[in-house]
Length: 429
Image (cartoon, rainbow, N blue to C red; front, top):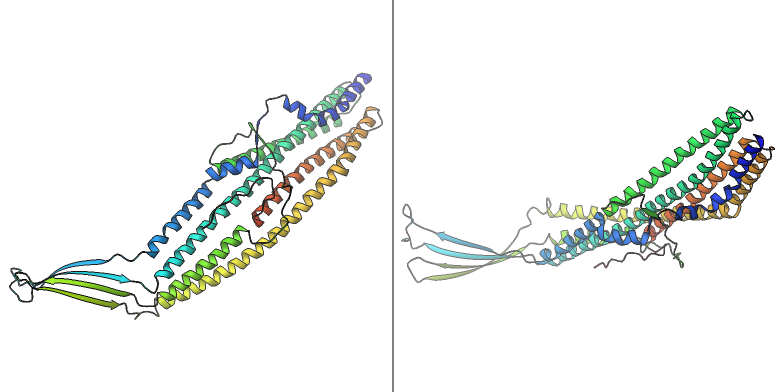
């Protein structure tokens, strides 16, 4: 029985390297799922994302308000029948008159200011399109990284679970033959159950990422028929961290300009509004025709309660937008520093795992397996080495996904490409 057990153990650990290095070959034998890339997602988001569509509709609506703001008010026409005699509504009175009046309001002082204010609001709405597009790109890259991380971690766990199942079968056979103890069997079963629970969590993570991308695309993505691919970092990655292209900063600056235009409009509305009119009249039953001209202006009697309060409101709004802009710039600078640190950490960890830790842990696992096969090592040492390598491989995948997420945040904060995928371009008026 002992030679049979040693032969089975030797087969388990002899196949470990082939399983770890040949997983891709084994998976390719199955039906390969379709790839899902960031470039595909960005192109589909630009066409189908509801938030981007809403931002474009808001910009169209804001541009449509420029015309009404610059148009003259509609003239007012009035037809009057005056000075009729009662009770028969007779026209015998010499003062009887039929009269047509046409008047036109002339907002000369505020017309240009209204046009400028409407155009500024349209620019704010147009800047919101770029914000939504970059938000969608960042979120899509992050969810793609989540999906890739979960898929890759599941593959590593599948390999480890295969090794655990085979080792558990050997431990159980040894226990039944009276050459092992029950604690070893229970330990193997516990490790296998723990690994299955972690695999289930990774499966839920990938399905959650697929659901999030489905909501962004307003479509259904099947997590089982798609294979996520991480975006490749740009070859000539921009290192400029200036905030001139940050969409939030651009939007804040346009809001400042819009609030300044609203303040100028409020100051212009203090001026009286002119009114011009013409009257045409005739006396019934005669050939008498009359014409009259009118000129008038609004009287700012309630300026303190109305116009002055509007000016104070717009001044306060401008101060608020100035403060919001400073807060936005400060938050963007802090976000760039945080994301840059996260990017450096992820890349450093990848170098450590690839160059030092993973080779060392692989050597430890092979040594522990060889010692256990030769009877000089313990099952606990072998399992600890196997699980340590499994955890390190998954941590290496996490660091690679963290790199993608950090690059996506930097793209959003700087407005500059960090992946080999063109940045969205939206022509702003």
